Length: 164
Image (cartoon, rainbow, N blue to C red; front, top):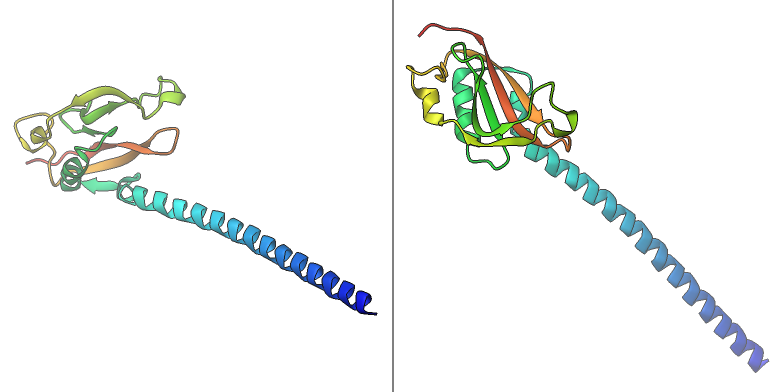
């Protein structure tokens, strides 16, 4: 009887230990999945926040003063370019890096940097030059993203010519 009681106690102890280990493993796996989900959500939020500063320029019409503010704000950003097309300079002037945005270029390279730093932002404020950005002018804004969906630049095209 003593041996049977001891055997039952040992079996119960082993059963409880196995049950406890199983519960810990299940909790650990659940916690791992919850952590992965939280990391993915955090990554999505981080991406949204980093792109949020460009939403105002996503196919909207803005004023010339907003264009010059964008030039000031993003002029020193790495791997980034801004093209401004004015009424006097329909070919446009690049500030920062020159980006690949032509339709005849290969789609794989769209948005990539193809030229070094160009343009002098001070020219955008000089009324004598073709690069002058009239603060009261209206510009159509367009965001340039590369194939990784990273914002690489902005293009501003003047839609109305306002006399000075």
